[in-house]
Structures are given as C-alpha cells and as structure tokens.
Image (cartoon, rainbow, N blue to C red; front, top):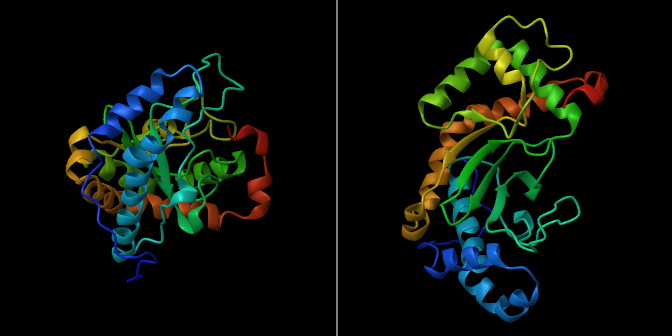
Length: 246
C-alpha cells in the first residue's frame, strides 16, 4: 500500500463563515470587496479547504490511490470573464482536483471536488479532455462493453452514476453502428464523470474527508478504466478523426 506523501493532517470541518464568504463572493460586482476581505477569504475559506485537501490526500494514499490535492490543484476563485456576459468577477464556489502529479486537467483520471453554499459535489473521471482522449475513452467503452456497463451499473446502484454537462444529439462519428441503446447513450456523453452530491453537513462536521474516500473507493474501477483507455490506445488511433471526438 502506498504511503502518503504529505504530513499528518486533520480536518475538523469548514468554519461556519465559509458558506457566508461563498455567498458574498457570488454577489460581488467588483474586485474592491476582495481587496478588503482577502485575509478573511483565506482564513475562513481557502486555508481550511487546503487542510481538507491535505487530509484527503493522506487518506487516499493509505487506501492505495496515487492522487494528490494541494494548492496547485485548486482552481482560481476569479472567473474568466472573456467568454461570458456575466460580469461578476468571482465564482460562488471553491473547487480542486485530486490527480496524479497534481495535474488538474487533461487525459488523466482524477477526482473533482466542489464546495458551494448548497454543499457541492464530487466527480470522478477525466475533465476537459483533449478530443483524442475522449475518442480513446469511447473506443474503450465499445471494445470492453460488458466491463464498462458493469462498472457504470455498479456505480449507479451506489448513487454515483455517470453524468455529463453536455450530451450529443446523435451518436459521435464512427459510433453510429452501436446497437446497445444503453451504451449508445453513454457514448453521446461529453466528458462523462461519476457524480455524487455533498451536503452542508458533510463539510460542517468534517465528514467530507470520509465521503471523498468512500466515493473514490466506489469509483476505483471507473478511474482505472479511464486511465487504461488512455494508456492502451495506440497513438495513431488517438490522432484518427481528432476533430470528431467532441
């Protein structure tokens, strides 16, 4: 079993003010608030969230996962306003990933955690994949159909079913001959991930750490399936129909 690569860490729960800070962040219209409240944001939100990441990383290491969450895997609170009409400068959530080598996005299997005023969620899979990686994952779903459907069904039964933010209207190019309707629906998913909701109580009581480890354990076969899909696919196949994977 892999030894964790972080110092002993304890997480007793997010401060009560953390949810208030998130709600205030979502309401802001300028950066002036952050200039005045930066120390409070770090004290009540960012610092305890980093402690949560350290605690989970330690537990995942003991459970045999090679996944890390740390300051490098936390996403910015500032919103990218270049492609949105919404001019609010901040997100109303804080989020991070647990990934090998602290790599936040790309063709890697990882766990994504978000904390927001409703509680947030956990997701397992690969996020913001390059098109060739999504194609490789779809190829694996078809090549190992029975194994994939068993994994997806088991996660669904445990309350961690596969979801996607975007669903293609028709089968992606090259997969139109799939006859299994259940598999065909999964193939239309863009960036499929297993998902489970988090509650405010999870964060307040410190149970969030246990919940992430339990979620990772349930999703371990899926994480392995995703990573194997990227490793086993030949480079020439990854390049084939690159533009059609999305």
